[in-house]
Image 1 (tube, rainbow over the protein chains, first blue to last red):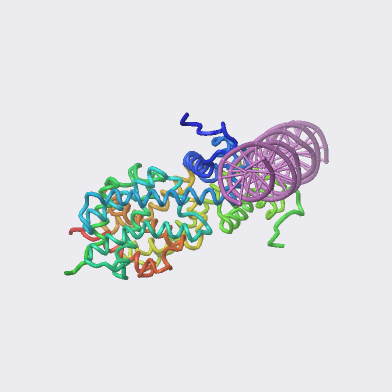
Image 2: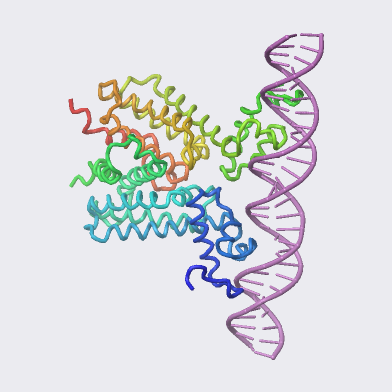
Length: 201
Length: 201
DNA sequence: CTAACTTAGTTAGAGGCTCTAACTTCGGGG
DNA sequence: CCCCGAAGTTAGAGCCTCTAACTAAGTTAG
């Protein structure tokens, strides 16, 4: 009763989410251009016209997958922070590690999340939600509430680093003798170096 | 006599390169999935079947574009090194800046260069050629010829940083109040910080 | 110089994709 | 209970990739 959830009834009830899920799996399997709406339809057991009741076009489905990705990433950040002292280097590094791990676990979705030519408001917002978690910890690290230039001046390079590391990792550049440290070590080390010279007090 | 180079003669003489050029322009304009072989054919003034005499499939055309990209990037590195002392921080930062500038000037091609699911040997090699230029300068910075672990331990984080910065920049994250410094300043600063504590002598 | 071969084009068409139009099913509110 | 709207359906237009079979032109060997 659980796996092919439907198709006893004509009205399927949950097609939107099921298409997102199917699309996500297909994208992860074959990349965003290997994916076809038709194939997602076959997976969900509906006709190829059905998706257009829920999405404007192919792109909108992919955007929905990307949004789901940002949501999960934000969750992962909060999870990573659970046992870390607020505003500690450990907390900041933990976010970085969670970032790269998300990318490694969902490489094609991760790529997609940043590759849209025309991003919607909603997507920008999800992205900023994610980034905000990092900035919050850095503000705490600096002992302030407000997210001002000082926070950005530290946060942006750190984001840059973990973003780059994510891409290199999913493109297989971390294994082949190109790196020396493990991913986690690199994030910790970079956090230390990129945040040093801050918090002069 | 120069721009539409052909089509007086049946044998076109230069179709392979012309398709690569047309594809590159189209990819830059609409992204790699907006691109269609057919459209490149129309641009080159040949039938839609012609490309298959030069390339196995659509993907192989895109790969050729990516390879061209790596070639240009390597060139850009050498150019950037022209007036910099061998192995200086300035030289190393100049490569980083050239890296990001290439990405900014060719965002979609840049994305593609790293996004292939199955990379060919040739592509891996082009990529390593590029990376090698950076590693060479870092070796020089450390006063050695050989590219050993010490060189990688510095080179990889730096690559990571400029790679990340490239992606953030082409995704428009550098303008919108998320960053504080200019791209060039960030690269110089990161170079300094990520290479500090090295060269103990 | 020419015949034979090879290379690089051509047209035709199969099969897959996205998306629209028009129709159908079914659940819910008055 | 009937009607309406939401969420399916089938049919099909128009685009795409790639193949098969053919043809034009350049190259080489005798």
